[in-house]
Image (cartoon, rainbow, N blue to C red; front, side):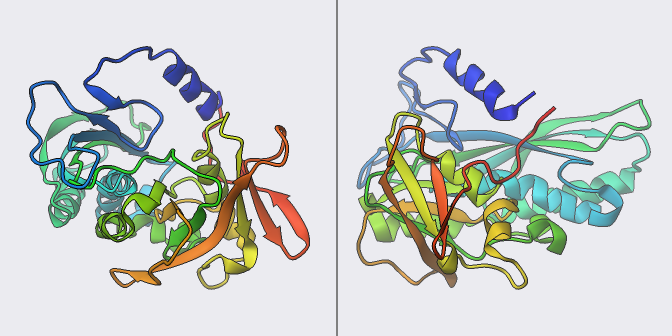
Length: 314
């Protein structure tokens, strides 16, 4: 099984979803504006709306339970979903948690896990308002936590991952690479406040945004629709990297949960809420139909990195 192939089939066959669905499958979150609901003043553009997304963490894929610790696992389970809210420049509202516990977990173990989830949810104004809990009978079943997060579109409107325009600057928050080896994938802070500030500062110049969960190369390629005729160029020398990481690791390691933004050319903030904001490339016309969606320039060398990152394959 190839994850992206299956998702494309699901998206293609979802069909018409009605006028209540403003953004459907394929983005970081769905955006709904149900008829008859009131969302307050539309503000500067885009109206309001309800944002919804679901994500999961699974033992053996996203963490190793003894090494990670239950409090870090709980943090990651909620923070991953909150990073999706950030990617849409939304405001978190509430969370739902569904978990399947392995039979060797005690009541106290479960409370460590859920206390960590509750702490992160409340810190980002997305309290856990419900969910479901089950204990598996098979002794080898992995700990699995599925989180649904609800957000609200601000008055400025959401930012989709799609919307790239020729000439856009490609920018990233924070630093990249080495998240798994360093353990940062268990302790990262979702860039919710930074995203809202970027939307306020850049306004309509902020054309598209995505959070970097699977790697810069792969996630950047997901910002370009198949018929866009565009290419993302990245300068290896401009990538903000964690210590000991080369550009290849920064492009492919994944689990950074930083924001990748496509911004109309012009003045940029150097920092957003104390977080560095770095231009790393540009959106250009794709030189040929079969040219790669994302390339890195390293000196005179040009590298196709559109598939560099994490992807589930069976």
